[in-house]
Amino acid sequence: MARTITASSSILVTRAADWLMEQALNDAELEVTVRGACERLRAAGIPLARAQFSFAVLHPLYGAVGFTWRKTEGLKVEGYLHNTNDVGSDRFRQSPYYHLVHNGLSHLRRRLDTGDKAEFPIFEDLRKEGLTDYLAFVSSFAAGRAQGMLGSWATDQAGGFAEAEIEHLLDVQGALAVASKMAMRTGLAKSVLTTYIGGKAGERVLSGQIKRGDGETIRAAIVWGDLRGSTQMAETLGRQAYIDNLDTFFDATAGAVADAGGDILSFIGDGFLAIFPCGRNHKESQEACRLALSASLESERRMSDVNGERRRGGDPELGYGVGLHIGNVMFGNVGLADRLSFSVFGSAVNEASRLEALTKSYKTPIVASDAFKDYCGGAWEQLGTERLRGVAKPVAIFRPAPGDGAWRPAAIAKRNVARGLTDAENVVLLHRDQPA
Image (cartoon, rainbow, N blue to C red; front, side, top):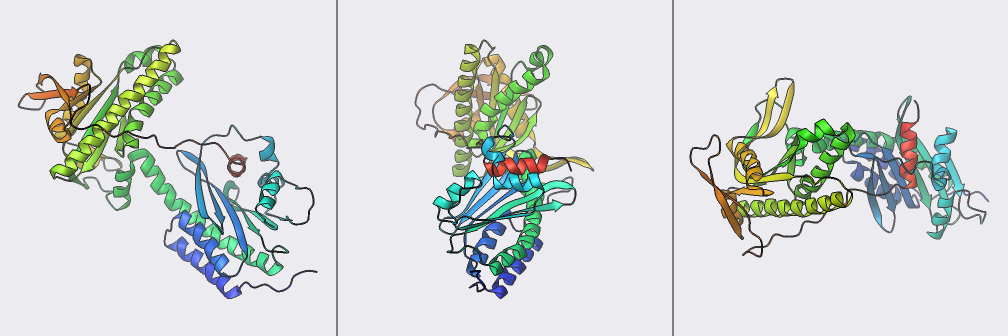
């Protein structure tokens, strides 16, 4: 017997749709939008037990982002890296999302409590969760373009969704797509700025520091890293092999700095510039220098692992150098009126670059200034005294001494930036990449 009565409130569902439109106008984050939609539908009486959404996104690092909401667990978020190796797997092609896209359908509804053989493998998993009804959908964000949202609603209610409840979900689906599209556009601006000019610099640009000359003077521990022999590599290696060497170097060195919380401001040819901003008092300066040193020592360890693997593979080792300094820097926009760069500038930055160059003559991977050493503490070995171009007085230079000092750097853990693909991501990538 068909159900005709539902406990859900049409008024509250309408309020949920209105709230979603408010999120679209207020530049809300995508995670807040998705979580809020699920919670409000549940509060309105819709018997949601699980919802899943995947979005194809324009992002320099990620191809898709996925959200899974359960009434008992809340929202889980996953970003999927650009990688299509799993597209075409049997499980993927047997998913309801693939069925939707492949057949040009906008919706697919299946009861899960009939006892029939599961039409799609994912239904076995959903049945184990006690779910009784499943409604999947596709919402395109632009006509003629394969970008948008794939999603599904599921319930554990006996008898599945009522017709009125399905109607409510379809009504809200449009508002959710609009709010999600706007949230993704806002997120795109943030992610592109973060990826290309760094997190803190991106925040400053978004906050309004967009004119040439905008900026301020800040204090920071400075890390300047450089790959050795890159000119010869460029001349003797193929393009891809040379780029692979650069990426290997950056992963080990700049990656360690990022893992330690440093802000990578720019990749300059075969080198990189990073900072650990700090206050002007001794305690914060000390903390910034210690983080920079921890990152540099972790870089040394990772490069040792890299070169060990290269030796075993018959490849030449990668040489490198890191210069460490602390001082006041100008942080802001410079360049042409219509082409700007957001970075740090000033004498302290120049001195860090020249300290790094000294790693060649002293044949050591890390060189630090006297000021950096004093703030950092620990055991150091003086290499000598040098005249740096542009600096009036000779500068004492140091490298970390072997063995334990009064202070030992904290271990730097790698960020988890890689993962496999799910069926949801595979179908999103297929949906995005198919011809318009």
